[in-house]
View 1 (cartoon, rainbow, N blue to C red):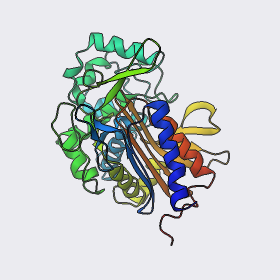
View 2 (view 1 turned 60 degrees about the vertical axis):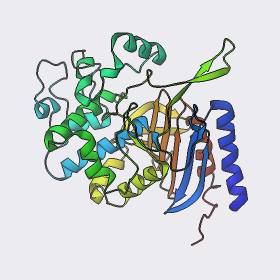
View 3 (view 1 turned 30 degrees about the vertical axis):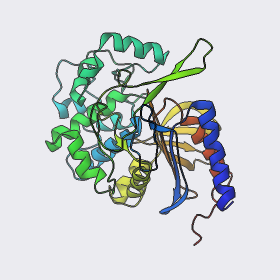
Length: 369
């Protein structure tokens, strides 16, 4: 599949995402520095009708966990900490319910068993609404601001027993980075992750910051029949400032640059890059969509029946934000999807996935040779 046929196949998926899921954002498919497909749709600012562009900056939600994992593993690589070191000792935590045997590795793989600052099990929307009633969300500005929301809650299960998705694990890791380096978390990421990876347009930007080229996030307003009747901004619906568990702002090109830097030894030595990308703990029992799902050090992977990694990367979802960053090792292809509308990137990502794994995109040949 080449040229026009290639673009039509991917654009058809984008149009369907716009029509079905309200997708507004950008899609970038690339390989080895060559662009296979780049497309921007929708509006970065609905008030002034400013369109999204390929260089528009989007919040990426939990895709940011990959940045946090890199920062932690860099410190492990330098001998500042060990994966088996206990977080309570490293942070000097007292009068908390975080078990004393929880290690850095438990936090990276989300097997710590600690309570989360927000309960993502059960009815997500109801749980989030309850949190907003109890917690002035505008006060959550730094990693430490989240501690009262989870450090007094009982653990959910013994450390190491299983994986359960947990943002609080990464907040503790962010605090660890700050404690060991003496630098604010955002500053450390700029100096040790973003700049080395060539991510010139990536930063930790708050919703109330005035920053160039950043898309506003939007939630649909639905009528009684469930149809989209309008939109509202996400300023009162999600955390205002980024933290170690999510919320960085980036471009599609910067995210692809990050995957390359992670693979090629720019951010971590080869052994530590391999350790970060290794599938480690089961995310789900059995298979989902025909794959076995594993979580590593800030990386989600899906495996085929032979145990080979088909795809690795991370997802990101919050109100007014939907993001996917994936690398396909077999074809060397990267996929970055960023949206400023809620829950709108997932189906599109799976559509592109199906093109990739059946060989259609592999045959695209963006730049021959």
